[in-house]
Image (tube, rainbow, N blue to C red):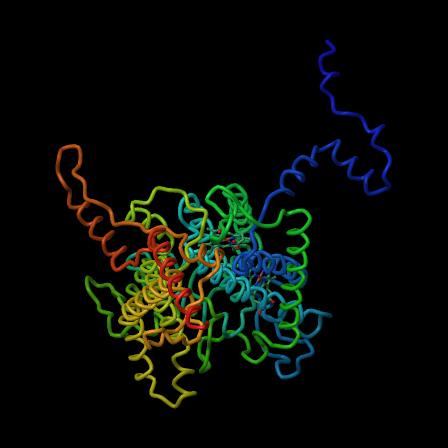
Amino acid sequence: MSTSTATRPETSVEKKSGGFTAAASNYLDERTSISAVVKEFGRKVFPDHWSFLLGEVALYSFVVILLSGTFLTFFFQASMAEVHYDGSYVPLKGVEMSAAMASTLDISFDIRGGLLMRQIHHWAALLFVASIGLHMMRIFFTGAFRKPRELNWVIGFVLFILAMAEGFTGYSLPDDLLSGNGLRIIDGMIKGIPLVGTWISFLLFGGEFPGTAIVGRLYTLHILLLPALVLLFIALHLVFVVVHKHTQFSGPGKTQQNVVGYPVLPVYAAKAGGFFFIVFGVIVLLATFFTINPIWNYGPYDPSPVSAGTQPDWYIGFADGALRLIPPHLEFVLFDRTWSFNILIPLGALGLFIVLAMIYPFIEAWVTGDKREHHILDRPRNAATRTAIGAAGLTFYAGLWAAASSDIIATHFKLTMEGVIHALQFVVIAGPFIAYFITKRICLALQKKDREIVLHGYESGRIIRLPGGEYIEKHEPIDEYQRWKLVSYHDYKPLMIRPNSRGKISVGQRARAALSRWFFEDRIAPPTRGEIEASHHHEDHVEIESSHQNH
Ligand code: HEM
Ligand code: HEM
């Protein structure tokens, strides 16, 4: 039995030269065959555009969160046992609080580098969610979620929800006044669920709110279960980015079949490595110069003193705002139970908003009937209806978000609380329609402008007098590169209604066709080759005439 000898990889004897690094990499390669993977991955090409950095910012801030979070676990005590504070922050000396709060104060005042680490963790968390939000907007407005990336949109969206859950559980850990108020709102929301609400609340808090179990439970979620899920989904997300290859904006030489950019090794890896340190550095600077969550000012949790101006972290604002905007009297007793529609309606509206955003790629694909793969990104103006839908969604979100600061807006601008609430109710309900309309018109106007530029060139500012006495402004033709950018998009058409196999047109079909018409209505067709050529002839004509004039 000597078959195996022929196929064995070469031994290390011939490869020994080349110093310690080469020897070490040979050693590793012979035992793992990793060089094939490095070679393959190193040849991957990533296109260059500033907006593709947003996903990277999310990734790098997560690494910072992991590092700083691990440091915090060495000192944080996830216990609600009552203690008397005995650290070096004098104003709270002797005050009764939970061990969680006392240990967070110790991290802030008595552990070397502790306050910086806490602030790094908190600022990194804020940046993490912000970059995810911006990344998601770039994916949405450029249509990067279209086939084959719909599933990666959903995976990304799960990451967005997980990030908010991480943020909320983290915010609740120090057991200070703000933590407790946040948890009390969650408790109220849970209890508002008909029939089962009270039971779920008891299950979560281990009895009557707040109990003594919640911080320990949230801690397990915060440092074990949720980070594991985030890591898993980030890994899946990035595998998909590699498998699908990255999208790119249209331009000369860029097609649906290729990716134009830098290879991972050495260019992209070096750039990404440098960028990681920039993100890390910015977070450390923020944490050094700007206080975040000074829990010593708030004190331990106590249900009675809710200070004015209490704010959640920015990404929870939209949920808080929804609760503030709903009229409070939508609550009544029926069948011996309290029905809190002032909680159920905001919960339902937010749930619907989140689900619609999550499945948007599938809705759009259904409405447009578009089954092709898309690797070239849309310029937002060229997908006017999608861009307008996005603007409507953002206006809704922004209205809710602003409402989380309703009291601060009222006191700062010397307005009445009711006035602010009514204005924001208007923004949340009518704002999306107004935003939709305005955005769509702006996109169509920009499309018309592009068409004009392709056909007639840029306005040069040079006025020429024609032989007949007429004054015209000379238009400079645009170069090939610019023209490519302006005309290389597809003009889609609404779906045609077709009868099904039994020769009938179903109601669903009709609805779909109507939606499709709405999606594509008012579009401005890109200039055709014929039109461009015709416009060139015209340009030449003017050119000859004007040179005549000069002689
Ligand atoms: C922890 C959160 C996230 C991380 C670390 C992350 C990271 C990344 C990175 C590094 C890329 C490649 C570079 C780029 O295009 O920016 C990417 C692409 C992508 N991400 Fe995310 N992402 C996250 C969340 C999301 C969310 C919330 C969505 C959408 C709901 C999303 C959807 C996508 C899609 C569709 C692509 C492919 C884009 C393309 O090829 O043009 N991601 N992500
Ligand atoms: C996306 C992931 C994460 C987010 C968004 C996040 C967010 C937060 C926030 C906002 C706080 C409150 C900080 C404060 O006191 O001002 C916190 C606390 C904490 N986090 Fe995280 N965190 C994340 C992941 C982690 C991980 C992976 C660990 C552990 C390895 C960790 C460990 C801790 C600890 C121990 C605390 C309590 C100490 C303290 O409040 O200062 N976190 N987290």
